[in-house]
Image (cartoon, rainbow, N blue to C red; front, top):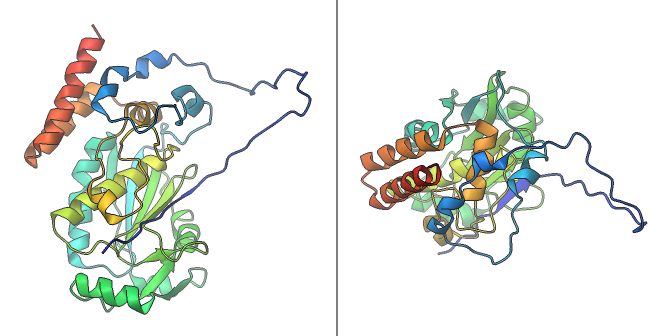
Length: 310
């Protein structure tokens, strides 16, 4: 049974126009000039399947001049914030994924103490409602019973009341993770939501229906995707990538773990990691999980960037 997963990205696009076509366009103030060659990953482009003939994604220079969220001397830790009622199986997966996320982002990743649902219910600014009966009956049965997950949490109310107000001083990004269903006024349910500028977001595991390897991999995909979004990097349209929009569970299962070259160039700018070190560490990580496809991919990346640097 297919279930549509809706990823909502909060973003603000400011457009300026000049009705007098005879005038020269106004130049952007404080425009940054950067040698983008040092970030280039053109050498690994054909390791990724293209989805479009035209270039729809922002260039690296456009990204740089959009004033993206990026680390600085004080903000360089990614935090995971579990909240609400949660099965031990999900908490265990979240804790175990820290190792992968540290390698993937080349940053320190910490898990905060889970916020109990009773504490959430005491906050009048956090809105909740009952999960529709048909949805709850189906997912509860598939997950082996979830009597304490009957209520949905409005995503933006939790973000505003908890994540934005309690963001650690050293946090570059804080991702809330819950097993409750989440929603907003536009959509009956959400799988994930991120703010492209403020470095906060949520994911829900309610509609992941087992606690085995598929669930671990799906959580890995959506958590890494939402965190990348929080570095002001929107969904990718040009390549098959971890940053693609997935409209149903089948697409999520078949989705990528890896970032497209253009998305990874932007993430390097935001974090300033070393490509070689990242590729080496990811190849070692996937070797421990016996994933030959990912091992080969990262070894190919290493070979190509080393060749390109000579």
